[in-house]
Image (cartoon, rainbow, N blue to C red; front, side, top):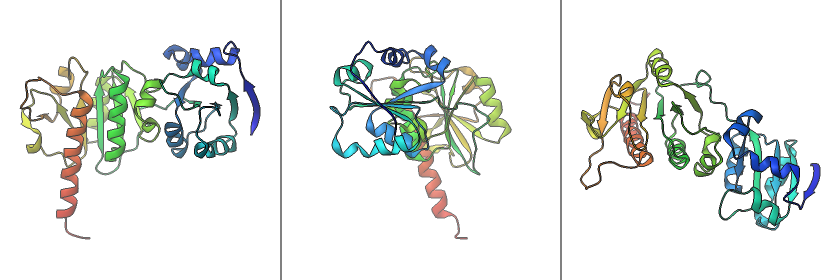
Amino acid sequence: MRGGLDITSPANPRIKRLVALRRRRTRELDAVTLVEGYAELDLALSAGVVPQALYHSPELAHGDERDVLGRVSGLGAEVIRVSKPVFAKVAYRESPDGWLAVVPAVDTGLERLELGERPLLLVCEGVEKPGNLGAILRTADAAGAAAVIATDPVTDWGNPNLVRASKGAVFSVPVAAAPSARVLSWLAERGVAVAAATPDGDVLLGDADLSGPLAIAVGAENQGLSAAWTERADVTVRIPMFGRADSLNVAASAAIVVYEAVRQRLLRERESPAR
């Protein structure tokens, strides 16, 4: 284990710098992000993330979680023990569990994404709330999606609240960020169809063929998808709605459409003759 440093003062310069990483500009300058929470850190480590440093408060952590200390130090990362008051200053969750790591920024390059023969992708246009993007990532992880792409993003993929909301799935699911026009061209070049989810969709969700190479596009919380997506989509789909509310939360909508695509793919696999 490197270091073995103990910090007990919230005024320590390293603690002040850690607090500054809550700001997007500071994270981008340092090319890092923050991972708080044992479960989130455990998933990040399993996905191959190598932390730069781990801030750990033994007073807050459970004994059965301390195996992560050996895993992190074994990767060459510095482990810094901090007091409970110090951790309270750097934590951004209401009930911290004593684990906070500084890790390299997530690679969001579009060209690095690798697509299989019949990929399923999620595209989020202008989605602003970190909680929604985090929930969409968890859905993508569970559904085995090839990637989640943010177009014209408002929130960066390294937002600590997004990392938390995704339960660390931002490290297990490939992500990218790019302007809508570039993403649309990139999808077309690779023969990936676009299904735009909108309340005014032409086709009822269950009637659309979502079994081929597909990108499911969802829009911002308050405005939905722009014309750039609805006009160039191969199909616009709508979810059956029978209540008084005019729309679903974007993360809920994404989950419904994604799992309809998963259902169709599983059905197609069962109906295909055995090879």
